[in-house]
Every structure is written in C-alpha cells, then in structure tokens.
Length: 210
Image 1 (cartoon, rainbow, N blue to C red):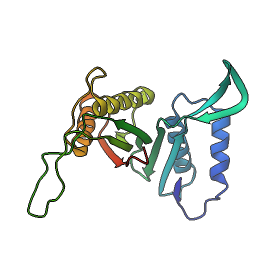
Image 2 (image 1 turned 45 degrees about the vertical axis):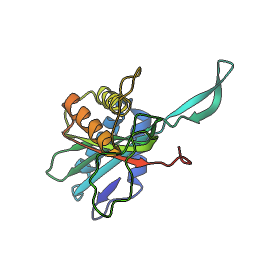
Image 3 (image 1 turned 180 degrees about the vertical axis):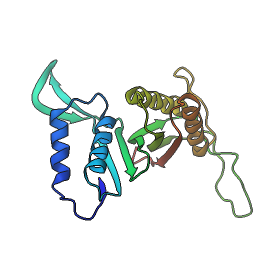
C-alpha cells in the first residue's frame, strides 16, 4: 500500500488491515482492497493518493487417505490472483485485477514463422516447437462499479486458457509467440465487456525451466 501524507501513523496501516480482515466477511477480496483504500482516503484529509495491493496465494489443505490434515497446507501453483485499488484525492476509484505466475505449455502446434527478414536475419523459421511461458496479465475495470468480480476473473482466466491452447481435441496452431499474446488479448476484450484495458506478458521459459 502506498500513502502520500504529511503525518499518518505507520502502524495505522497493519492495524486497520488486520481489523477489517477479522471483523468482516468479504465475498470478493477486491472489495477488501477497495474498503482499505476508501478508509485511508476518507479518514486522513492530508492523504493525496492511496494504492492498495492484495493477492490470493493458492494454498490447499493437505489430505492423507482422504482425511484433511489438521494444520498443514500445500501451495498449488496454478496462478496467483491479485488486485489493486487506487484513488487520488477528488478522483475516481480505479480497480485493477490480474493473474501472475501462471505457467502454460504447448508441446506442439506452436511455431515461429512469417517474421520480417533482411540481410542480417540468421534465425530460421520453425513450424513445430514447444511453447512454454509464465504469464502475467493485468486488467482495468475503469471506474469502480457493482461488478461480480469473481465471475469476471474466472471468465478471463477461461479466455486465456482457451486462446492459448485451442480446442481440447485438436488444439490450435500459432505461428508465433506474439500471435498467441494477441489472440488472448483480443478474446478477452471481445468477451468481457467490463474490462477497459488489458495487459499481457508471457515470459518465455526454456526447456530447463518448464
């Protein structure tokens, strides 16, 4: 969380966060970020800008022979969900959401061809290669409205997996990493009207990192 202020007690931040987390039930953890943001903006007149960042780490309870463990959990790395809420004094509340550390791989139907070539080009075209990458995506809802944030997040995640992989029975060929990125972006923006902007980065992983 970032707070620009003249004299705001630093221990107010963790105290308020812990109190809100323990006293209130949130259906959407984005609402938690929004409430924290609004609190500091409305409580401290000297605050000019507030930004709240919250992430949800995918911990699952361990099971042994079908019985849940009393205190142990395992982190299942299928992507970390995060959100940001930010507001300037006299400005609108803006909400961002996203997914990070999501690793995806295509073992075939991925190539690198059709790119620009000149006298300095040495890289040959390929029409079959492994595409393995770690995704980071972040989108904006614009001015905050009464959205079903969970539904939207799940729909965007489905769009990402659909555009990356193609149909389960036959897949879909992609001539380049860049084409895959563009396909994901276009599918999300066409199917999720609540999203006003969408940023996607795929960090290419070599075979030893996959």
